[in-house]
Image (cartoon, rainbow, N blue to C red; front, side, top):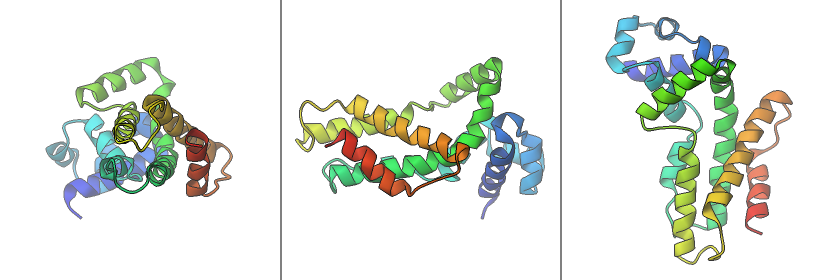
Amino acid sequence: MGTREKILAAAAEVMREQGYARATTKEIARAAGFSEAALYKHFADKTEIFLGVMTSQLPGLEAVLGDIAPGRHTVRGNLVRITSTAIDFYTESFPIGASLFSSRDLLAAHRAAIREHGAGPRTPVTRLANYLRAERDLGRLPSTSDPDAIATLLLGAAFQQGFLRHWDIEAGDPTALARKLVKAVLP
């Protein structure tokens, strides 16, 4: 494991334990076994570390969205895979991101920093809607389907499950739940 990967693994652990707001670059560097200067050789700022954690240290929602191709496998199967992965991703990311909402100033600063990096929480919804639009264009979804609504409903439900899994700690099988959610939007 290289320096960058060690930093991201340590950052994920620190952020899971303390949330993004309380995780400092100094603490992340210490947990990774490096100086803070070494951390900045690999990452421009804490936001870049956060994005690295989201894309490489948590269940691979971005990877699954990148892997799903229109016309390949079944639409239902693809949506179950995406939704199940999203449930796992939001379950893991919820403790990291929840602290951002503790302060309006912190949230505004983080929102601006994330935008500068060309990312944000709408990205998965947009990517899923684009996939669904392509499937509709191929005739694999009814022409009356609303890709934006389907994407919003599935990923919104996955996000809520991420929250509920921390609140109730009664987690069922994410794939079984994903099948039910997909069936509700694609009867």
